[in-house]
Length: 355
Image 1 (cartoon, helix red, strand yellow):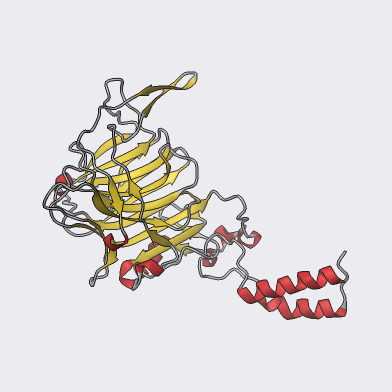
Image 2 (spheres, one colour):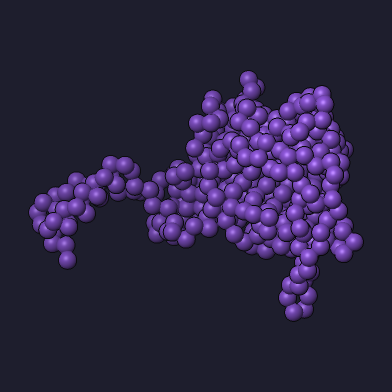
């Protein structure tokens, strides 16, 4: 048992001002338009970013994606809901003879002079052996449920697919995708993996839907693509107007958020790779979410945060200010102890061990 010696009491008194306190800087979370409270948040207006690679919140992907060999790029699991639960069988898609590998590259993700993030698919005058593409990922991989927004201008040059999505693995994925060849017609796609296929090979609308936002031309100016991921459902929006809600195969595990611009030569989707460089423009991303990491314990000081709005931030207000909100170190009152306080508490521990 730790004895309260004069030395220890003096040290504790000295350290008391360093104890974390809930302030008005979003420590108790973020409220959305529907009154939901999300534990963590990040907002990145790219006009405020000088060095993309220095951002702690996101990283530029450099992975290679091998060529797809099936319609979906893998062996597809057919899933149907029945009275006795979910039945599964296997079905292999038709081969894609024109698929190409992709290489995400650092040079394909940069902020231009106008303050927009560019994710580029490199063009080639002849058919390439692989396609050079662009993708960013959140540094955190424990994102589970939330509201996610990306303000984007879709390219008009045919041959690419622009994606804004959550991904854990092929059995836990939520996509908002736009194919450049029909983006000017106001066409987008809501997709959830694993996908459900009919036995003939066609996708059902349980996990794949074509969305029409016409007369909006998605290649003219910026639009806010958004999805709200809740237990058992995903709600899709464009410019805060609801588009559709999907309720089948909704993920319930933590993962990461991605934005990308890619092509693999699939004539049934992205189309043949472009002959010139094609950029997806993103002016801002904003993610507000909870964590799947059970080691992150809520701060008890935020138990009554709903009765104390000053401890939370309103997403609409933050959006209007258009300021950078770092992902790390804010949200739902996870205990935040400064470096000096942490050091002081370590000293207390050391003293306690010697008393």
